[in-house]
Length: 139
Ligand code: GTP
Ligand code: MG
Image (cartoon, rainbow, N blue to C red; front, side):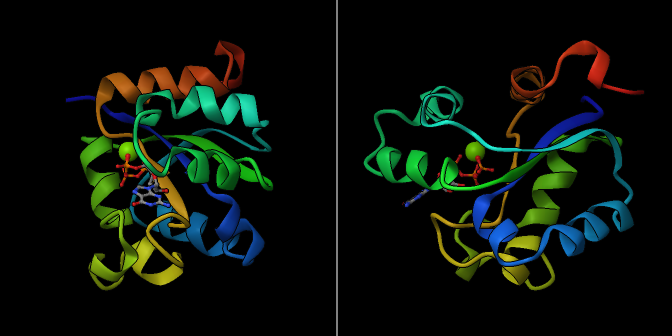
């Protein structure tokens, strides 16, 4: 079990002014931020990041959503980070997300669900490396 995960505060949450509240919740839940930046995905970068979903019916919608405005990307550290962070963000569909989770508080819909969290240690590494070079990651 690894100690790092990767997250994005998605365009909907940035547009709705939730960057600060979401970061507060992440920090209060015991995660240490070891890399972070405000950035924007081009359509091409969003297509590449979500390549695993390219056969899913919502892929086009997902790519246009994720490239429509600024996002915050970060690498987080905590024991059992991947699982702990997915607990903190809640279910993909905010209507099903447990009370108090980030998605229950800040997400708007299944597609526009405020945050991303890696689903495995392997993907956390791949996704972190997608956004950050070695010298941008502190630890
Ligand atoms: P991430 O942490 O963002 O990866 O979410 P997840 O792991 O909970 O869900 P999954 O990897 O299955 O889907 C990736 C993203 O695609 C979701 O977070 C949503 O933004 C989007 N998505 C998933 N299902 C749907 C859907 O039915 N419709 C739309 N429009 N978007 C969806
Ligand atoms: Mg996922």
